[in-house]
Image (cartoon, rainbow, N blue to C red; front, side, top):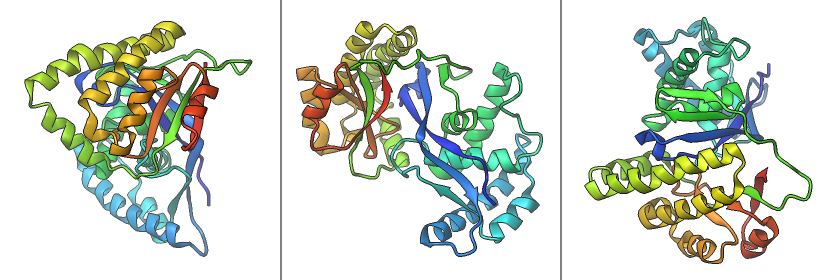
Length: 311
């Protein structure tokens, strides 16, 4: 048995801000993927994944009575007992949606009356899916917006206008011909934990100054970045990303691993690249934007970079 593939995602813009109703833009990233499988001789990884699925199944049984989603639990339990696991190349704790892909795969295979990708996806259906996925993914993170699984399930770019207003987005097609600009991932080499980072953020939100910075700077530049990116206005986009990168360095230091503070600042000062958080931060991938990938590569030669999108 091998289920369909579900891909990782990258939240290009909106991390933390979407909690406070900023815009956001999330795109599928097909470099990493996962599928549900059963193996006759499972390795250590498969056994660990299967154990986690047993706990997840118990959790899903408990949320049945919320009348939001119903699963074919008998079939799910049988498959999990037979050793089903999630075979995934998506790194965990890297901010690219490892739990989101798993949630999407389980919903796809076991939800009753599921909303399918082939339907006419109205805003109501998208919000319903987001609510279901948020509830399911809370098992992994303590709380979840449901956006990661939604992205993985639909395999479409998603534009978040506000909490209650999301839509599939058309993003400018990538030009491969002699384009120098790129969005890239920088591997920090550290596994990040989402829950502690979110609780640091929530603690900071109790301070008036932090709340005002979030609204007047972080959300403002994030919204502008989303608009610029969708319009393909590269000049304005990079001006806003530079300011966003600065705001994050000044106000989200705990979410940036210490050894990257100088590298972050160097990008802003040289304009060779700008860094921002990928997901909740604390490790995993750091997202980078550059108008000249060769320059960025030279400046970041000690790190492994993966190109996500070309300008």
